[in-house]
Length: 77
Image (cartoon, rainbow, N blue to C red; front, top):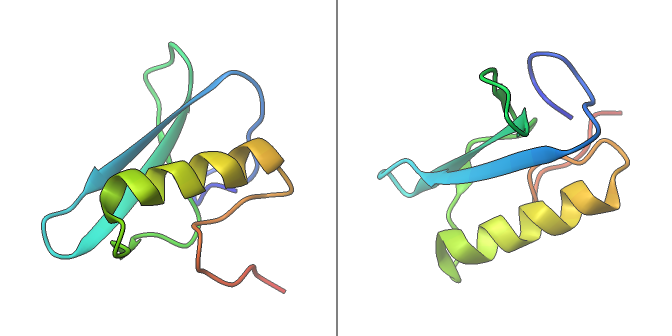
């Protein structure tokens, strides 16, 4: 689930970025496209396992589908 356009599906590229303030942001884009979209629920605090652990959690959520949001955030009702 993205902030800008809602749910996107297909061949996607996911990028997790440490913002340098203890939080991380995730953007998703169609692979090869210029446009990128913010994953709903972000930014979030970097977990104890670091940005790599957060990225793995994000990938698992995106692969599972169902309008994935940032791990650790509650879905919209």
